[in-house]
Length: 317
Image 1: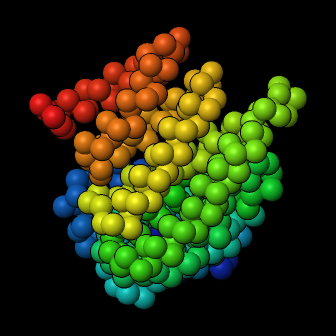
Image 2 (image 1 turned 180 degrees about the horizontal axis):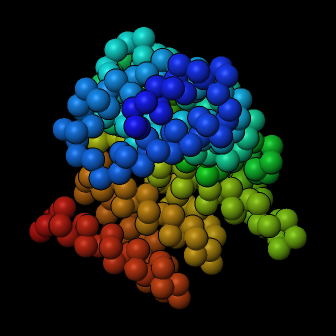
């Protein structure tokens, strides 16, 4: 029954109503619940998932269809036949006007999250197109003081930062990494330095929603998402993250009363423990007093988790 339903909308995508397509995809999505990986790789699911990607459903104009289509594909990533034309078409759908460039903000947000999952689940085959993908998404990864001036909201950008970090790491080309990291530095490090050097954070108020301090917090969080994709460092990536950690530490010292900045510093240190190893300790020595004096239970709890991680990772060191 499920197979007939899916194949019907695949074959009649141009004439089927949005509600018919949505109902069929919801049914297929539901049957994927609890399936084991061997089951997902069976011919049954490979045929249906491949048929969906080959069809025109991914280009449907209705936002509800776009959402359930990408949600369904992300559930069945293990079922995607690893054929170049299918992968290229799927990436085009995700990166195109029905995906992360969709006019509907909620669709863009969901597809961004789905893409971060698809990139990891499909692994090496997606990395074959890493340069083109990074070329496509880098212009979208841009934070402004006023989020309304951004193409994508912060919450939509965050999974894309994670996917970008993973793809850039897997690419392994230090030359490309250097160029891309310079773009991220321009967007984040340069703007953060400008705020600190010109003491723009002193202009923050309740009325302007503390835009300068919040920009520092938002930038640190996005780079923390970006860092999740990196594992072993090379000279280029190591220099970038050490430079960024120095700036994060400076933020905490410059605006010591801001609990969220402390929490973001702990977060990115937590993310980078395995990446820069014992050097993490260098970024804790100065701000540790500010962290311990914090009255925020969230900050203290995050610091305790980081300490546990450090003891587990570094041992006697």
